[in-house]
Image (spheres, rainbow, N blue to C red):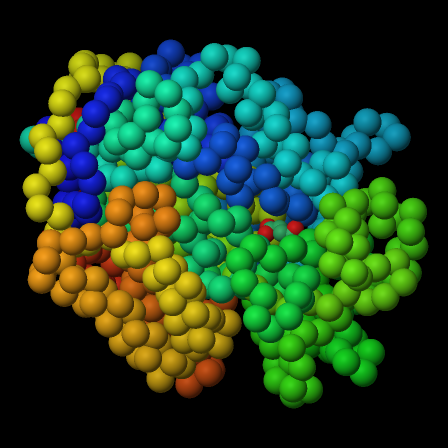
Length: 572
Ligand code: SIN
């Protein structure tokens, strides 16, 4: 058994666990996949980089979009999703999402999640950008993710699932035929599983979340460093649509130099009637789109950026003083507390807001059953590119996508086992990795990458800014390689050095894809190519890492998506 593809510097595994499935990540997608796999009788292990409830899911505010309300339908949800996706959604993937979504939400409720209800006990629904109807279910007012995470973590404990926390995933293991055989991990402070080890399993589900930390200011927690995409690239899997990074329009503005995770001000605040105003108090979204403040979020983010440029301002304002104290306290307690913690009282003053990196619409390329282009490797949630989001994710479709596609993955693994049986795999020592193909970056590289990406590949991009970013990233890469070449040294393996190295991998691909896409579409905004060009660019940019670490970039049209089934074991 070998570590597949390109290997980074990792010592030999010292311990191992055998399982049928290993799920990497513990947000809505990972825990849903794990619970469904366990319910199907599969020996399931969940590994996660921090604690079980430390991922992005817990920070989701607005909610889960699903056609649950009277007069709504999956067809209407489909239409809104396709419009937001700006011509690049895979319609079949969206159809699956919106038709299977309502029942997936009901199953989440059966698992123990409590959504806000009205006096009759019906789920309360709100609106967000791009939705023509109230279809966003929420919990605790604006604490939907925290409630979903609580319910799933409790269910995982109640079902006695095996979990390994503080476990940074390193690389995919493959067998002699190139099929998935597990993952290597670096675990910190977890007793018998301390240090580097491996979980051997013929199915690996990546549910590692996003990569928002590739930019200086983001709504994502510090753990969102693109680990799953970087692992998949090293394993030879295809990634797609990485240029489509969504910038949330209304993030609490804490100063031009603010870095790291920033407090989100949910779209639901606009859904309940808040207005965006400029420095002169003018509602600048009126007349720009039929939905005004509730236009799809790429349109709102661009309008905010434009007005900021016109007024030479670092932010705009979100005015919801008319809600009054009682509504703020009942409906948006999390946002109210975050604003007040930073000295802003939304009950009496407008909230300063600016766009910040929020969501990766692209990721590891999958088909409609969550299968990647590597046999036995699956992906769901933000790390995946199922084709649902296209060039711009519709608000609150992400928790839903995590639920629906995690369930489909569990069903596929269970069906595959029922049909063919899973190969029995005993824990086996993994050959000691040889000389590292590339050194780990020092932890300080994280901040250099964030600055490069924010300046060159942020909300506004041009060929010039992207070329500069590509050049700076190349220099970081070369410097690290030269160090290795000269004296064989590498940064000490640890979470911070792996995270910095993973961030560089995803940044390189993101910039390469953004340079190739010479148009403006969805959340990809090229100042030098301001128009959408359907004739040339109604296509996906798909990237793979070559064994020599160069990038293989190709484009494919929507008809060619999802990929062919070359990785289906029984079809080989
Ligand atoms: C929000 O509450 O505005 C975020 C929802 C989302 O990103 O889907």
